[in-house]
Image: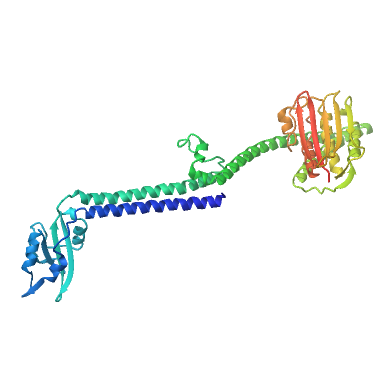
Length: 472
């Protein structure tokens, strides 16, 4: 059942049970009130108040009832009172001394509803005789005078009110607790507190808390919030790590720029000094060193710009069909001429003479150069570097490039962060003179060509790069 339907069913079912519970309480209340009020009703009276009213006469402006009615009143141990419109008694017969001769507004109603309160039952009748509004009150003592019944009625009303409040709180908790829990959770997330608002004092197990029926109704929403919380926690940790790494990288870049700038500044001071008359060979030597330092700084700035352009898809990749076999061969030939390639063995293998791929050769050359150069520069003499290029004709068709060496390998932390934009290896035996951007650039270029790259490395067992490109 979908979340929307389940929530609707949950609310409707709880409202149904609430209405049913209140209905039962009302029925029980009516039954008990009927029982209490009718428990001490007298037997069917032979003398009715309407009959007394019919036989009430006015003689010389005085009220009276005939003798037959008086006999019946005495026989039934009843009394009669006639009140004026102010509640004062104007006539009575057979009335006990305890019965008042004046009634305040509402007193007759109270005595009628709660006969056990004063120990007698009353019946009333209203009629106008002449210009006078009169009230007949017919009373009879209760046969079982039990004042407890009056207090029982009041206690039952209080009990019904308390039960009603408890039921309202129960259903309010059933309906509102999950929503308040979710709102608290969202409020925590908005404040940067990426954790579930769980109280260990109520339940020892978070899973048991979630499995409660009222929370299971919102299980998809709560699972989504749980996933969001985990994601935000992970992003926060990654951001902190990235900030730390970036600060370290900026420190390194600042140092890398400061060193060649210091060299250039030193040589310019020497060349501009009037104290020395430098020979032409010396001037050329100084200029060559300065040129190398400037090229290094240019490369650093270019790498820095390129990695951010690739990250933001700002580099215009111009794809065209080219032979990847020739591209990789040319790269290997160029890299073999590096000073670091001395005393290293190179091997190239392919299962086809020509393998065509839609590529931007300028950038893809850069990616393969960075990967192969990484194996050349960070391994000792005698290392074997193998490049294998295969076209996989299975479905879907792919081009697989494998670059591997049997060198010193990398620690797990190093190869896990090798493609991070600000990461440079920390091994004391490795060459850390690079910008720290080459591997990140290589990966971004491969991804821009629709490819994928994975790395596997172990200390003293070498490093392996697995690159795949889809074939249209």
